[in-house]
Length: 312
Length: 313
Image 1 (spheres, each protein chain N blue to C red):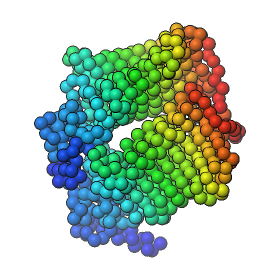
Image 2: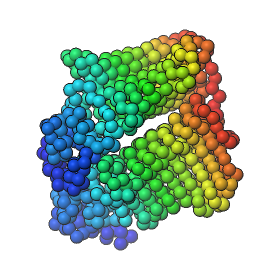
Image 3: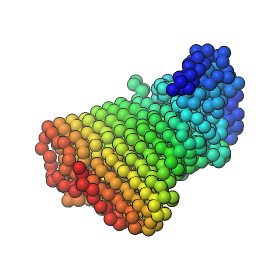
Image 4: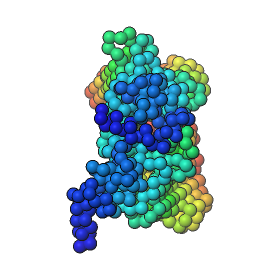
């Protein structure tokens, strides 16, 4: 694509001329604790806060946080494709406060990546809500990050967005670690969802398909561990759990419908222990399906049926 | 040091930081060249944890900005707080003079996190005891940390505390790496419990009507007397330990379940149990060791008692 090539040339040219080219869009924008948002966000003249870097960076570019600091003062709205990362060894903090999420993505068709960031509340300030709230049909990748102590959800995806999360800790949030609704598709691996009010909660309230896979992860805390729920005809929600642990939750595997829609939680090669309900299956069209090789122990009780799927 | 100083100066002008400073800091800072007479802001960090704990707001954070030791005696945590060393630095907290490095006694059910800290002894000083003691129903998460070489337990929790140990090394401590009493609960994942003299994890059920419960996933336990031990000695009390996708090797007794009264249970699946003196040790009518039937047992000495099948589901 000649347009793409030209854009690339422009971006590279901007990078090569970094410091002298405030207007051109950067392929990589830089933030530092000593930066100023009056700067062009180049390496010699970095900016201070994420909104300035988001303005400066080209679509598809990168934002680097160069040292340990907090990089926002209000909800950060991401409106272009971008990778935001703290360099290894730095704490790249993004906070949720004043009634909003730390990060909001409402636009469709973006590719956004967050890597090595820490998302938390501000003790003593007016409370925020979620860590990342995405309502646009965009792609979100979260790697090697921490979401802790938020008043709301860790990550909330409503609509046809996709989430790919790996090597991330979601801890002690007051809502579900990961909330999916109405068409969201989530891939969760090698992550720890600990002490949240809900692990992975997936809902279908429109005639959409909502899917999550959870691999090599741990879920522990309040509310549901892995939950699929529908309230409308035509809604499909499926949560698959493999090589994972769900422990010390009130409801480990929950699949419910209001009598319509199709909700499924399936589980294989996993440890399901010390939960209140090992499984909670309720409503026409709901199912909890086991591969038959899971380790259940120390759970108090269960509701409904646990059906089986044959390993192949 | 230039970067650290620059960082302090820069954030001193931040409205966010200044606003927080007056009403209890949302983030309190410690540095090797800090001073406890300072307000524990980034511009003027403190030196030791007690000062930062006083300055920080309930639910706030304490950042250790560079590699140093951040206490001179037992640190009492009495509020919800996250304590972390920034990546790339060693945030050291020591146990000495007969006490633990950290004690949590608050009955307000605080949620506390330790991240990227190193807890150890002070060679040459009067010996301390444990790494962390939780003596009330607090929730403590320890992640990406090292707890090593202490005379006593790595972490000891009781009175209904909740402990989550994630991606942490507990090494060469004098007692168990982790001990739970009464109806406390623990989750251990992605961690290494190596060379602790008494062993890896002890769950001691000594509270009638309730259970001390532990799950262990994706972890390694090596060395010491017990890999895991579920132990109950009170009528109505219970201790349960569940193990998945883990390795227990080179211990004297890998899977120990003992109930002179009450009930004790260890279950394990998808795990490697190798080169232990005993693979399992079951003592008492209400003690069980349950196997999912898909474990790899090799090179162990003779077990004591019966291994009970646990039907996979």
